[in-house]
Length: 74
Image (cartoon, rainbow, N blue to C red; front, top):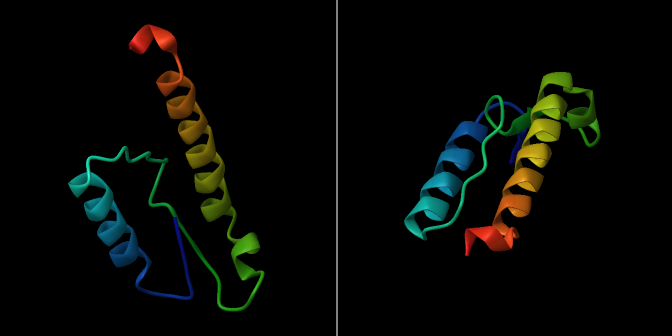
């Protein structure tokens, strides 16, 4: 995920996704881009859409971890 004041968050996420995928890592998605916006410390907590995306991302990450820990997948 990325937190930004205005711009650059999409490019940061794109770079991270390329790195992860080029190193054969799992990439977990959300309902939208995994970013939140704020200018001052604490402002990101006011970005309701960003926070909802982070909640969904956390749920998706937990689902992936649960699936990977399932011994039936071995």
